[in-house]
Length: 326
Image (tube, rainbow, N blue to C red; front, side, top):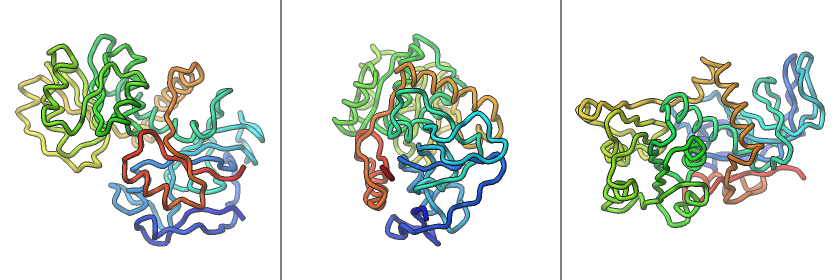
């Protein structure tokens, strides 16, 4: 029987165990995938602990993105073939050796895309693309400030921003994360913990305010980042692991600026055709070598607790991945 990381109650990694589960039945329009690698994000761990804004049903298997091999196709699941390499996404269920998913959540990989890289690609890069293109309307020649630039969506935003022709300023909390952001295409990197942080941003942009802020951090970072915006600026709220910030409402008025929410989950549910078009574009750019995730460490599935703790700590420069099978 395939194994999965599962818990009957929400909690920290120690609340979960690796358990044999019966293979799920395959219905029409579904695809069975042998999972070879699964990405772990901060949100995955938050959801596993029951602290995310939406709680999934119990018992719960964490994991929202993975990659593997198609092993079985349900009736009507056209366009895929047995043995094909694919990336998959879901609302839980992917810290496992096998998953059964609707065909719309399964995408064939371009030639040459590594399964471990594919396991952490779709969610972060689709989020960054939706944020910067759809919500932020970032234009060539504008300046993009990326908070948490060494994290999952932050690093993706650095690469997407560079591709769109923006000047990218990366803010990150450690030297290794700043080095990663620069290697990923940032024009400048600043210390997120520096007392003169705003001055560093201004200097990095030649004394000018920035046009767009990509904020997957929240907390104490949001207010000073919003204050870095110029007239007509856009502050994109991606998440808030640092806490939910309070922003003075006179700031948007004085700057003619916008605070813009980015919810990739609801976007996919409410605008599926646009979401699918975005996914097609990011995979096209991945195949061309324009977009490429950074992997910090891969853990075997048996070490899921250490991997989840590593991802939750947020200290690694690059993504944490679970691997299963050969």
